[in-house]
Amino acid sequence: MKKNNMMVKTVLTVAMATMMAAMCVGCGSKDTQVTAEITVEDVAEEATVAEEAAPEEVAETTEATELVTYDFETYDGDHVVIDASNITVQEKTDDPEGSSYITAEAANNVIAPGRDYVYMADDNNYYVADYANGLITVATKGDESSAATDENPGAFDTDKFSVSYDTDKFYGYVADEEAGTVILNYTGECAGTTLMQISPSDCASAEEALAEVAKTTGFELADTNSVEVNGCDVTYTWHVIPNGTDGVIVDDFYKVYVKGDNVVLIDIMTTRDSDDSRAEEISYLFDDISNTIELK
Image 1 (cartoon, rainbow, N blue to C red):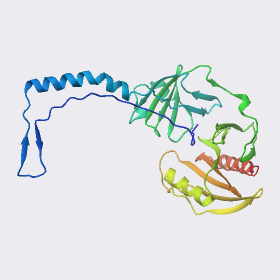
Image 2 (cartoon, rainbow, N blue to C red; image 1 turned 60 degrees about the vertical axis):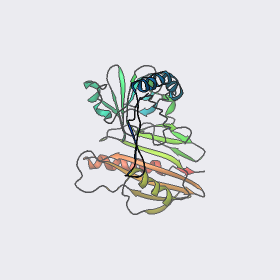
Image 3 (tube, rainbow, N blue to C red; image 1 turned 120 degrees about the horizontal axis):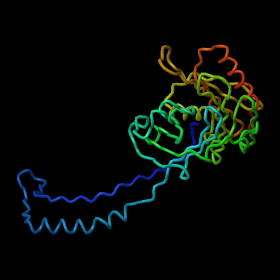
Image 4 (tube, rainbow, N blue to C red; image 1 turned 30 degrees about the horizontal axis):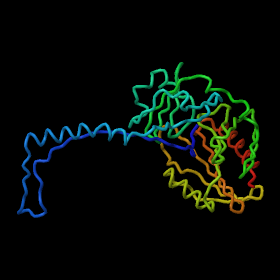
């Protein structure tokens, strides 16, 4: 599951000792040049000094590497955690999905929704092609993957908001405990990614929160409208996708709830469905959830 508030900490260090001998040093004036005479003995001495200094430089620049971790919900409703307990490979790459670590079985088995993260699996491992951080991660399967039934309570009551939902149709969990983000993942038949993400915002207004969305995602947002729901001012808009856009289309519908200085952003993410009646039914289900949201 995509984690918009994921804490990403990656430290990559490379220590390199380089020996260079400069044969000519130019002055500021084009008419004047100073030539340095360097003997074979001088070069040998510089090489010895560089070689002796190299181990010390490596020791000073090497830092402990902190892994990027992942916590997501699969299409089958399983809760998967990928962290230091099961990660076997995590490397920088310009082409995460093209990594040689990904098996043919995994490449054809995308197991969870995600915009910047492609979650795959084969019989033995999980694979995360992370475009947000330019990483490929491989993790072994085991007890870290489980259907955490205690994480689907049917309602959440946080410091900022409360919400309730039908556990027969949605799987809900706290995606980021520190940020207070809740995700409700639709478990019925659908075209693809179908979820609601509810995130407290540090912005002072709905306009500021939506401006931050546009800046972060690069999306063009439609003109806003406002209604009142459960004593909250609710401003809503959506991601404008041009007609004729090819491929899989994921629609984002945004609602910003405001009560006093409490601002909460809702992102309803749905894969555009060729089955109009099914898409309409799902939209009504999200409306039902939206109507239960109350701000503190």
